Amino acid sequence: MSPAREENLILCNAPLVGGSMEISPDQVKQIVDATADAGFAGASLWAFHHLAAVGAGTSPEEVRAWHTDRGLSVPVVESLIGWESGDVSTIEEQCGGTLEVASFYGAQAVAGVVMAPEIDRAAATRGLALLGKMGADRGLKVCIEWLPWTGLPTIQSAWELVQEAGGDNIGLVVDTWHWLRQPGGPDPETLRQIPGDRIHCVQLDDTAAADSGDDLMMESMTNRLLPGEGGVDWPDILGILDEIGADPIWAPEVFNVGLMEQGPSEMARRIAESTRKVLGL
Image 1 (cartoon, helix red, strand yellow):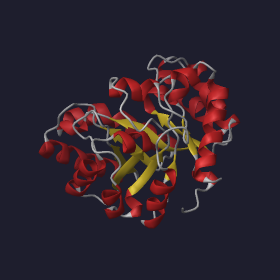
Image 2 (tube, rainbow, N blue to C red):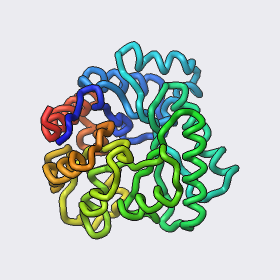
Image 3 (tube, one colour):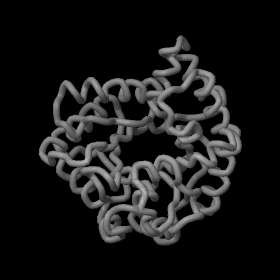
């Protein structure tokens, strides 16, 4: 595989609080400190967490300093939503704040998802094209992530949308949970067709190969496995990423209620340990 450099290994740390939208400034600082203590180089920041801390009375500069004072970069900010509507005012309202947070932190990329069970393809193409321009105006890459239970359920559907939208700064997030659980399972043929520089971020996690029969979204948000503890074929997917010359940001994202109950520091430590093992660090 291509070298997974330590400086490119960051943590999606929202799972340390279960992805909670109700978060205090103390909790934000706690998960930032846990990220640093586990040896990550940076964090993939939920814009909402930054805005929640600011809304509770902490200055934006202080929240940013919680990261920089611990030596953490913020190369990715999440998450762009609502853009698939293609409506300019909706996109500016729902995505503008996330883009501004990304600019404030000096991020490289902003990640987005589709939450709706169905999409209008033409509208989504217009929306993604607009996001690409809004990102480019700020020097940001825009990367979208497919979710198996939505109107953008597979890597093929996501890559086709990226191509239709155009924009050299638009690419993909590859989440290994979604890679394994997408309809039809892993799709190495499509991944091999994607230029490596369009894989902006790889989110590492794991799951059982067989569908549990539970609600996919609920399982994804509560019971992901640590990298290496499920059915993901790591040599295969990492080998393909190497073949296409991908050099992404590596960002484990392990939503798991049982791990969360162990506390942010222990959860971050275990995620770091398992991630480094599968990446060969």
